[in-house]
Structure formats: structure tokens, C-alpha cells
Length: 497
Ligand SMILES: [Zn+2]
Image 1 (cartoon, rainbow, N blue to C red):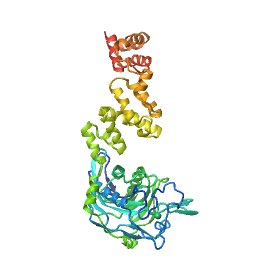
Image 2 (tube, rainbow, N blue to C red):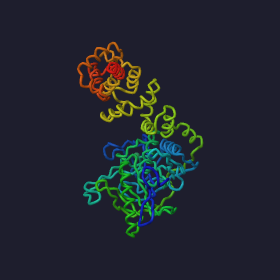
Image 3 (cartoon, protein in one colour):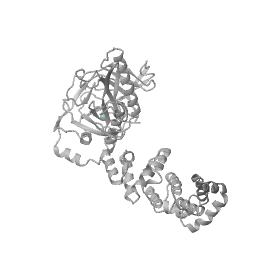
């Protein structure tokens, strides 16, 4: 990582010394399994009446025994291979002991010294530059319940409520190496990690609801040093923007503390969105505080090589590889290829439109332009709109064949997106076919010239732009059906001659 990178320098100044930030991210991602990690309760807790999705196992009642969710193990293996991790043959679960009201068992089943995977990496991009961040480990654990506080959490809550519906929902922890140096890198790493998890179908990527959440460890050290500074952990960030702002704030706060000769304690701080600041929550726990020990109620797991290989073989093409292929195959630029592969649905849509014979660049321009705008306006993706993927392909083929003009295509797109219908039938029914016959346009060209004497004079005096009002007249008279390029050429011939 170079300090001359275009996205801004990673150099900090403390007095006359150069420092740099060191950032490592821990992501917790809920798995899209139907049932919870160790019991048969539904994992779909969002919107369920409080404490309705519970049983003696996930409530931690004495005498109950957990059973490992096979799908959750397979999803974690899928994630690990997608992140280029090694998968040891042998893995086990451990108890992490701590008291908190949202943890009725008094411990969380997690993984300590023998995680399901380790030593991987994620490739991502920052302003078109490729980066790679190490993945320390991906392990499997269970989520806790949810607390609801009446009043201000940080001041004085008047009462707190516990909902155990989320207790025991399968949760992956993806620990990244401290390879990141700037808030921008951290944000892009998260965007690409989320993209991978959604591509492989293990997580829904919802930061707002907390099914994809992130804690950040950040410290600063003299540039060139290979020692890590005392790290501060930041919590409570539930958007990419929050992660970016919180890291920016925290790096500057630490720099100022050092500049004033202060010391930085190891602690956990919370990001407070309304104050745009991190505030100290508690001194940081160490692993020994949790009294980890092997979970006595679960057998260790032996992962057969054949299972891992089957899961590896079933991996879909990942976003980075897919963007590279679209660039190669269709001559797309970096930026467009990145946008078109942001989700698997978007990339599938693009490729299925192109597969019907629509030009790759034309399809890209429409999808990233008008279609994206309409999807945003209606808060409805193309796939669920009246138009649908097949409708878009049909409309673009009509445009490409010259059957309809660009402005008719634009109008139809908006209407079909909302109401649905068959593009070709509509063109036929309403007589929207493009007028691209010089003979048919000839009298309209005469009219345009007759009514636009000022524009004609301006054009003849060298004002190129004046021609547009004459073209506009013809387009208006044909309700957008005229071939604009042909009108342009005919006008030039007539006026130039
Ligand atoms: Zn349960």
C-alpha cells in the first residue's frame, strides 16, 4: 500500500514524526439457514412477536442438549473457501463465558483455538486499484438475543426489555488481518466482503437490521514500525458510511492524544451517530476473561475432504472474477463492470439481456442509466417490475433494429416498467414505429425550415447548436418517432446545399 495512492495519503503527522493507522475488521454475518444453530426454532426472527421463536435449548434451560445445524457448517465452509481459507480436518466448539441479559445461557457457543477455517484473503478495489486483505479466520457461533431500552441508552434507561428470538441464530465471525490503512480501504473491504457473502447465498447483507455487522480495531503507530499500537475497538456502526466516519474520527482522536503527550488505553468505544463521535464504553476484555473451554455437549467435527471439495466445486463465479470476465468478454470499463456485478441478480440480468443478442455496451448503458433510475424511483428491481428482464431485452432489440427511436424507447421503458405489457405489440398498436424514410420526413423538414427562420439564419452564420431546434421541431411533430440522426443529416443537406 503506497502513500502516493490516488485516494489520499495514509500518512498522519504527530509533531514532526510520521504515523500511520492500522485497521482490522471483525464482521459478524448471520447465516441464511431455516433453523437456528443448535435447535429447530425458526431463524427468521425479524418481525416475529417477542420471545415467540424460542425453545428450551435456545433459552438455555438446564438439561437440554444442542444439536449442530449441518447447513450452517456447510455455509461456513462455503464462505471459507470463497475467501481462500485453509480448512483444517478437525474443528470444535468452545464455550465463551460471560454474563449479559441477552444471553440467557450465561455463555455463547463459539470457536476458540480450532476454528473451522484460517489463513485466507479477500481481494477488493479502492478507486480502481486492486488490494488484498488477509483473513485470519472464519468461525461459527450463535447470536445473542436483543435488548430494547426505553430512554437514552448512554444516559439513563428507565427500563430494558429482552427478546430471545435472535438467541441461537447461526452467526459467522469473519476476522480480518490488520492489513487496512485508511477508512476508505476499510469501507471497500466491507463492501466487497458483503458482495461475496450475498453472491454465495449465505447472508442477506442487511446492515440496518444487523444481519451483517462490523466491529473495527484501530491503532496508530510510527510509520515503518512493525509493532502494533494499543488497539481500540469500535462498535455500533450500522452502515458503510458510519464505518468510514467512525474510523476517520477515531484515527484523528488517537493522533491528537499522542500529539498532546497522552497515552491510549486498550478500550471499547461506541460510535454515536447523532454526535458523529466515538465514546468510551468499557476497558477491553482479553480472551482469558471469557474462560473458554471445549463445549462438553457437542462432539468435535471432522470435516471430510470430499465434503469440502464438493462445496468448493459448487461455488458460483465470484464478483471479482465475474467483473474481470465482463471486462474481457464485452469490453466494459472497470466502473461499469463493477456496478453490473454489484449483485448476482444484476449480473445475471445483464448477461441474460446480452444473450438475447442485444449489444453489450447498449445493454450496459440502459441498465446503469434509465433502468437504474426507474428501479430507484419505484423502489422495485427490474426483475419484479412490469417490464421484467425479457421485456427489457425485447425493447432494446426494437431500438437496436431501428424499429423505434431512442426517445420512444425511453418513454416506453418508463411506462412498461410501471404497467407491464409487450413492447412490440404496443409499438404496433400505437404506430410508434420509427420514421426513417427520407421521403416521409421531407415535408416535415420543409415545415421546420419554414417556421424556424431565425434558427436557419443562425445555423448558416455558423452557429452549430441552432440546428437542434430544427431537429426538435421534427421530433415533436412525429411524437419522437423520427430517426434523429437521419433528420439531422437531411437538415444539413437541405441547409448546406
Ligand atoms: Zn430454540
